[in-house]
Image 1 (tube, rainbow, N blue to C red):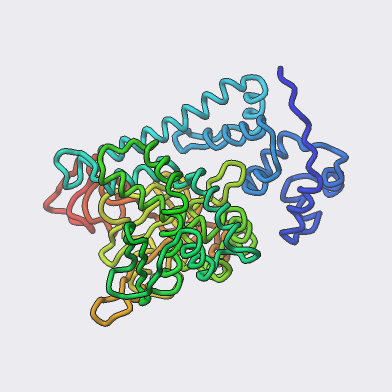
Image 2 (cartoon, one colour; image 1 turned 60 degrees about the horizontal axis):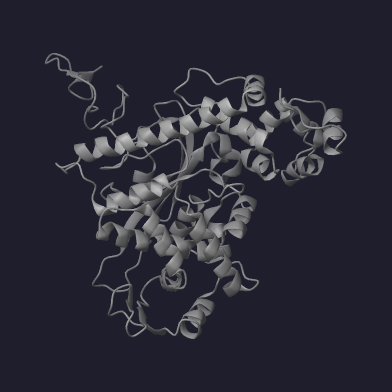
Length: 469
């Protein structure tokens, strides 16, 4: 049997309690130990037990990751996550998981790897199935679908670019949270010899590589202008890093590779304006209050939401969020999920999801407690947005963005404060889309699921004119 290293974490355990403003007795009750025992733990008179390690990982997953756990503890947490998949009837007890990691670590690692492979294979099968079901007789993915799927498989995090952009931001921003417009403009002009003009005659952004001439539309909102500048800066300053990722992606055609280059430049621009470590820390301190985070970094509501969905760096992960953008017709035009919720890849989302109401009511934040068919519950926040065009001749863009997490992270998400998480009252049952949703009693169903036979009784009529198995 292997020998586990005893973990003393008194100072960090105390800091975890104090940052939440919780008394020692109340924190002890939460952990299921006595106040005197907690005092001994906080003073490093006793090490954490396996049961307490599991309890901390369950209650405070992000803080526990920050405690610098060793390989055995990290493997235990990963095994717990895999064993909790809805595929299995019941999760395994913490002591069982700890014994498996102690006695059969190689088996535990293989189980975690197999579960990850199973999850990824399921996602790829959905991609193929949905491509065949879409208006694409050949089943081949279009370039934008290939790029979207690449980001999905990469978990919407690109470590090479994220760290390079963070380093560049450190050079540009000084003591400010984020590089200013002036700092970006100065770097473009002085370091990259780019001439810069603000004019509304060439689209949102136009760059002439031969003349080293950049034109930015001044009619965009300030946050959008700054993002366009950042995009051009990273696409030049980090060009080798971006091309390296594009080459490794091995996408099959030139259009896909070019779209990936643009997508990676956008990703790096977000990482430049919202540097990983400072952004993650600020987001947690503000409990992911989007408007307040956006004020700190000078970013838009959408840019901030999108960045929160990318915080997947090993050893410093953020809350696993899902993020999407929905247009007035219900089409999902951006999507990513670091949670177990996966969006339908073609067509719109479930009409019961709060994001559709948000599209119709701009500048108001809506919150929802939702449950998917697998029994998992999520806290969703959605806001309708209007992006001005800068001219009467072109209508403004109207859409909504949504951000959400599993209820186990509700304490980290300020938008969950008004919801009755414990009782589960007012839970909205949602699906991914009617095409794959198994719910038989949904009043908003548009058509039956594609994998179920239907039965029609001319003498009986419910909300829909059929029943399915």
